[in-house]
Amino acid sequence: MVVPLITPATEGALVVPYPAALDVPHELVEHVAWLLHERRRVRSTRRRRLGCFKQALLTLVHLRKNETFSQLGAGFGIPQATTWRYVDETLDVLADWTPGLYEALTGLGEGDHVIVDGTLIPIDRIAADERYYSMKHRRHGMNVQVIARPDGIHLWFSRATPGRTHYLTAARAHGIIQACLTRQILVLTDRAYQGAGATVRTPYKNHREQPEHYQQFNRDHTRLRAPGERAFAQLKSWRILRRARCSTRRIGTIVQAVHTLLTCNYSG
Image (cartoon, rainbow, N blue to C red):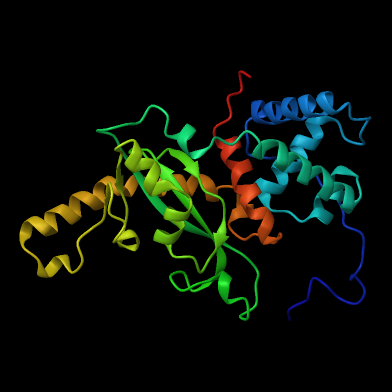
């Protein structure tokens, strides 16, 4: 016999808070708290229900564990609306520290190469929302382009565009192709970027029907591009980006905030 967790007797019941651990460094929470403190100081913000440290912790729990605002509010003893406002404020503070595309490519130039690929941030949408439906992934989501170093460490994440956007179209719209061409940086991508030209290199189509040196090129290309998956793993380690329940307009801000967290310098 299966007993449902939500019954007429329990529906609408109060959420019970419980202690839990968060798998992020304590220094990261302190760093985010310092950024919030600086924002409050500049704006002469009046006293809040949560201090900077707890507001930073609140946001990191939301990003890392993808808990709802009602769950977060119950855990931190604040109303749901206040929880949303605190998280939203912290995301904006973090997003302000995200490097631009050309800043992210600083130090790279002719002779260097990067890995460019796209990923889909799944979202809850109905079938009618066609612009968010990715034919490649067979689901609704938001498209994010990633630039990674040869060792797979991320350099830059783009803003989010509807999932229907083709990867090459997105890369051009974000200025990735032109930025790498300007600096003469070699770009390794998959077949989704064929036709990009410039300094972009993609695998050969139908390589199994081509001469051996074509097949060897594809094998070498795949080996060099494989570490790029590490950047996606780092991004998706923040569970909110495995299935976003927020407005599509905020996903870009969330990606930028996570980018800042992944590149934080705790000595600041």
